[in-house]
Image (cartoon, rainbow, N blue to C red; front, side):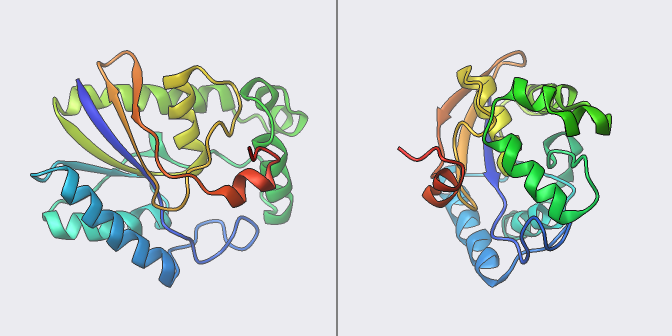
Length: 203
């Protein structure tokens, strides 16, 4: 079994409608340093690090990579959900709408269909990428990823159908295991209540 420590990136310097690929702000940098220390307290020796191609994930991975002397491997399979729109304001509205629904709702969404983006394929690829980690390591890997990609993993492990089935806060760390074919959730990371409230999912 391979254990996957999957981390959402730190706080970005811009929101969904401000920059397509922002880095981290000062708080995000501090969060990255803190999660690096947390991972080192959980994993005794350096292991492989994987990161989404986007800046906010690479910058979140940097403190742990420096501490371990490891070069993160860029892995598109744990990247952000592909936007079907180029206008950042329109993209934000689309994201809010589909995040409040189910995966089947995302696949059937008119904008999603018109864009030609294969969102079912994207979701399947996140799951497949995580399961393939068993081919790369027999023990542990650390992955820096995104809010919806983390939800794709969570849904694969738990069978839930909402696009946002849990709301990982910045630098939230969730632990999964895979035998190469199936993901299991070992420990759910910390959630942000603000996101749950925004999507009407607060309990």
